[in-house]
Image (tube, one colour):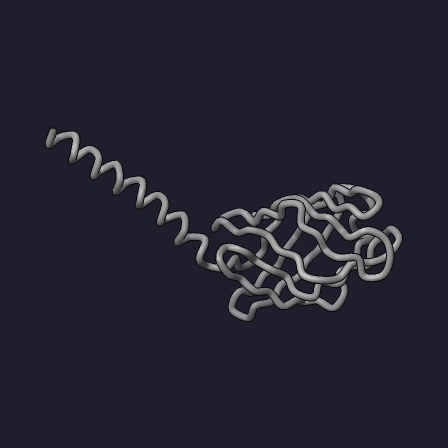
Length: 142
């Protein structure tokens, strides 16, 4: 019985270290350049390469979308750099203003979940600024 207790304690310690190690990694805001792919839609759907340049010390970041699809480069992110915030594993870009290639533009805050190595943007919505539907973004950057 003593061996079973030791095995249970060791297993708990290993699982605890793994769990808390993952949580600790996600506590630091992402910094530097992250690249990935996103699907962006507002009337039309585009598959784009995403580049984020983040300065965690100053809570700022820039966003760029480039080809995949030819129209990705026509999406213009105005008034950069944006203020960013990071809390509880969530990175938020504030007051993002995008000129789109379809009817109406989008503006507002957009967030993704950072796990310490990958930023997941899961069905995020940037509200419509003038007309039409909101902008929808889904993808990742690492």
